[in-house]
Image 1 (tube, one colour):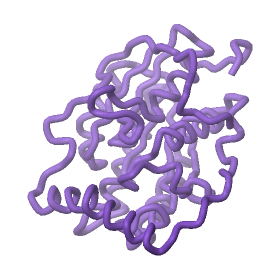
Image 2 (cartoon, helix red, strand yellow):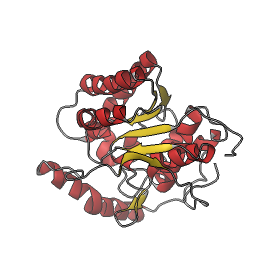
Image 3 (cartoon, helix red, strand yellow):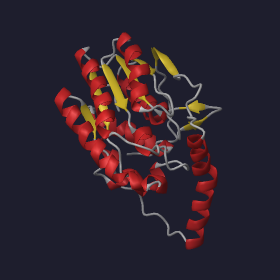
Length: 271
């Protein structure tokens, strides 16, 4: 991106769960970057005075995102807000009420747009292609995506629609837990959101990747076993105990602050 490009945003606030917090793009020692941070960096490359807050907390379901993050976001008087919510509702066992989840998302759209913010959101890809844990959730994904698109249309919300594009389920865009985007995946989401917001130079976010090398049956079995042991088992154990990965967690950027634009982005392929 060059400094000759322009956008109208000066105060950007991100709402959501672990994807917006940035899991899969960093670690507990270095901290997490994620697509929202990367989008803020894209925006700050044009406007160095951009202020940015990220209220997302891993494990949060949509009702709790609305209850905990909407009020603080409104208080910051943002002119750009991203809302990415619903994944934890989709994959948690038990009843899933798409209408209730969509109503909570639409309430956030309503209040944020009424306050003068431009709002952008994301639909969910075919997560069943990425995680065996989520294969049965496809009807839920289709239902919720349709409701998100309809609500966005009613409120003039920008939608980054990921579901129709097969590249969004490429395993290289996902981390080892198959639930969170990889650094490359977060970079693609950030570029896609920049493109959806009308910033030129990011149209390549849907570029296909080179073909994957064939994987032997033994290699696939080993990978599945490693995933079950390292990720699925602990996830199920938290569900049994009624715990969440976000218990005791707070937002990583609860206040508006300046954005540091990295000189080099080693995690971002040319797109």
